Amino acid sequence: MTDLPAPDPSAPPEQGEPSRRLLLVHAHPDDESINNGATMAKYAAEGAHVTLVTCTLGEEGEVIPPELAQLAPDRDDRLGDHRVGELAAAMAELGVTDHRFLGGTGRYRDSGMMGAEQNKRPHCFWQADVDEAAAALVEVIREVRPQVLVTYDPAGGYGHPDHIQAHRVAMRAADLAAEPAYRRDLGEPHSIAKIYWNRAPRSVVEEGFARLKEALPELPFPAAASVADVPGVVDDDVITTVIDGSGFAAAKAAAMRAHATQIEVVEPWFALSNQLAQPLSAVEYYELVRGERGGDASGGSQETDLFAGVAATEEGAA
Image (tube, rainbow, N blue to C red):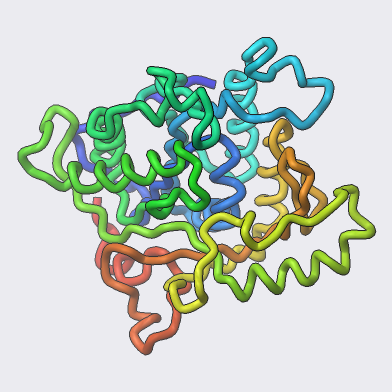
């Protein structure tokens, strides 16, 4: 897969382009499908412009299928190239046509789990200069001009160094992209109206694992994961926004299944390389951390649209 050719970054969106533009920043191939697959499919189907930026190729991941074991980093070290193809297949399942790797394909290498030797390698994402990496994302932001950005919380959901770094880079890029004096060679300044972090409400996760306990004897997985294994779990009142992607459950499952080196899917459950089963949900949850909550949440209820409060004002803007 090659990166899509970028139009002139100094030009605003052309007339006739989608009025709703969503940008997601993720650490590795497969993170997007697990966290936001239903959301991405839903908005793409509704005609929004969905852009995914992935920060590494996921070179340090483990490999599930025995027949692909030679791809692993301690063998042929070809997993990253293979995962580029998996990501392309996942994007086709979600209907997303705009995907880029931060700084170009292979610019930053997977850093491995926190504390691993890979964290210290000079070209890994964890060692990247945040402002330098953010500049590459600023160019995308100023080209695409999204109203909405989705990324991780400061802990990266579960403490993975690449997820933490993706959070830092995304938030820094959002600030720099709006700064009129910053790098005009990267395009005209643009302010992102709303920024969300991926979240999972504790009550929903607990209910999902309760159902999994009953289903587990019929599954090919030896055991279940725990609530602590789910990234971004928070108290329910932290959740500001719920996206019901139930109509796109099959697309999300297919996208996750496309990441075959990393995920095994038995709907509505899945497992990573640890073989610990987890619920697969097409309802996805977010915390709005920057911007105004939409009108449908004015009474204190949760938003049901990431673009709530901005879609109307941006309609037809191009």
